[in-house]
Image (cartoon, rainbow, N blue to C red):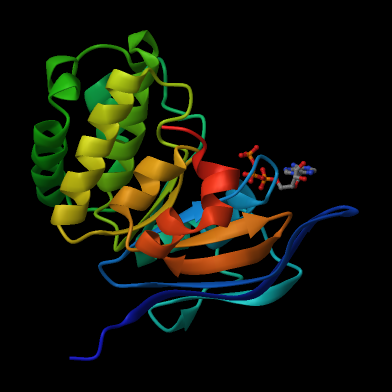
Length: 239
Ligand code: ATP
């Protein structure tokens, strides 16, 4: 069969007052792909994620999801259409338990289905299972990140947007997070991943885009990007 264009971003312009954060950004994500978005601080990665999930309105351009124009659709409706966003900075509810945070992520679903997803998320993140009755505010940074990803998965999205899942975490925890991302990949989920750890992101991904000061400077297969001298010099650094 013909593979479905899951997400299509076309010529997006986004401004914050006088600052143009995105200029004519276009990208696509096919069903089942892992696509990573690389770029320096301030390149516009978070802005792009927030625009896709309906938290920011573009001045121009379009976002289409499964063929439907969602450019001006509200964030809550976008979740229901199948896009979940685990934002940068985690944002779990500190005074609720781990289990309660997860169940909130499943609010769009029937209780029996949410309970099924809860089991799957706890299998993926055994640390969350151990701490399911603990208040989220008492978790370590890495555990809160796992919770944020788990909460996004509770909506059973067709597309998962992950913004900097390994930011500020110790290498051993980063490894756990990437292990979970590989499981997500094996389950056939579609992922758009913003990650400062470009090498790990490109090893996981099928394709990637490089965002530079609000525009797409480069797009290629993940392997080509890993081997590109330009990308190596700017984003991969030393091993
Ligand atoms: P980082 O990795 O630092 O989060 P980023 O690639 O996600 O960077 P954005 O956060 O999308 O970049 O920011 C893109 C540009 O828009 C930057 O110049 C930033 O200063 C600006 N910007 C972001 N948010 C706002 C805001 N709320 N008001 C004004 N300018 C903003």
